[in-house]
Amino acid sequence: MCKSVVKYLSSHPYYNATIHTIIGMGLGALFVMSVFNGHTLRWGVGLIALGLLGHLYPLTLKKK
Image (cartoon, rainbow, N blue to C red; front, top):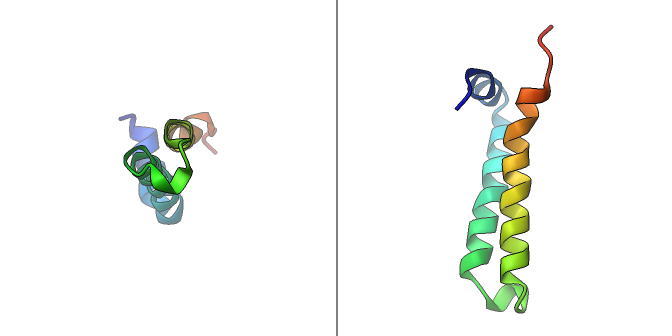
């Protein structure tokens, strides 16, 4: 992983926990069908994509 992403995530623990929780929810949605009423793939892939986009956010920040 890029050093700037690791540095940002280590200095922002709540953001780090949030994006990793979202990815975990996406993985859980892929395994649990009854909760999402047949839309398991849609919810799972959507949440995983949202979590991965959260990893791209630190790359867009400019250094001060």
